[in-house]
Length: 416
Length: 148
Image 1 (cartoon, rainbow over the protein chains, first blue to last red):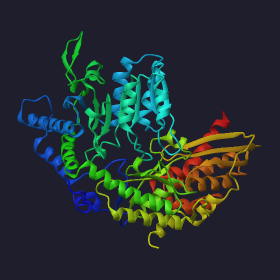
Image 2: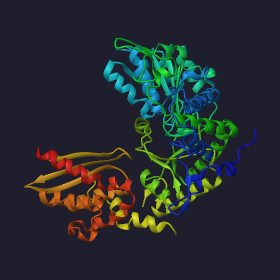
Image 3: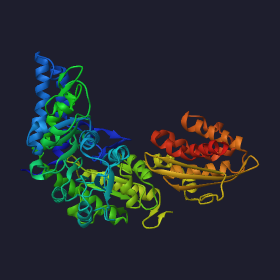
């Protein structure tokens, strides 16, 4: 596969041509959401202009077309992530809903008071709060594997926690806040060996790195289309078929039933049992061309490309005496660089960068427990993707220099 | 440097001075008014404590962490409210919020709030207005709690 040509790819993303505050946009907030190529935008427009009709209901031609287009995306996704069957991929609104679906439809049925859910201190709030709600409702115990100060997990501590027999082990494959790449296969293996059901938050993995669900061997995997060039409003939950079959539905309504009488209802087959009501079928269909795009570029190429840009950025930051969070070993890092300017709040950094046309994310990145552990209130975060190039790193360096000059920051001593 | 004009408009020198100042940074202990404010979007956090004597704000302190805007605004607030009658202090809070939230005219600010005109530039950054008002909203919560 040819190496990635970011300059050429950029031409496919209309938004990258716009100016922000009079400067060319350097979009470095890809961990939050990615931009969309014209192939996705045009597909969506064509869908509404030529094929739109509600799915799974009509016998008319338009309904058949829209249903086929929406289902074609599911089939493509199954190939993309190595799902054993397309119907084990449930479409939700977002990954947060996928995780909530596990909590509601699996955990509420199969966990009882006193059972333990094991997670980590590295999680996004969406992999903490649903379990806290469940703990309050059902008397389930929560345990979190501590994060080391370099932003990694100590496998010995994971093993020790798993030895206490949690019923569910739910963790992130890759940290959205600081970019740590977790040893996913090993964590899944450890969880399964301990007899736990294993759920992986793959939001930051699926868009960037190859994933083969059959090899992974997890029980649940959640991610989101909007972080992988796809439309907004399409989350994914992959589940092991026997678990999905044994679970109760998440939401009740149309499409998720097979037969309804006033006394009793029987559920529809997978995946529709978990897709009540009119789904977000147009966006779901337009996820297809996003997957085609990623396949054509190649995930290995993408992760190598963004990793190189992120490492250059890290070098620039460290040369200026900034604090970069996460592991120092490049092999444990992704295309995410989370940093702090000594003596300056991330919010001020974000505003100063914005005035240079550089979009970075600032704050706690929905990971307050992790921020607390790493003894910072928040960070500024640059996150790279396939369409970023050297020009973005240069813009970042300019923005950093301007910020340090303007606020008269002296590294290790703060603002003077 | 081009672009710095925008930065200078937002982060006026007086703001940076207040941000760096520690005159009223800290906590009153004991305190008659104690309130904790948080801006969940960015994690700015402020604890406002005050000594209220004979219907006056005898002493007011702010503690916590946050951006230049939230810290400088809290420092200016402490300076403006200290020594004022409670009713007057509440009126000053209302006047400042009017400036920030209703595009009030900075020229019409009461003299005690003269320095606060330096936060005008923040209005161009709607997300940052919450930073500027954090201390002021927090002290109002404190007044309400102290009353009850």
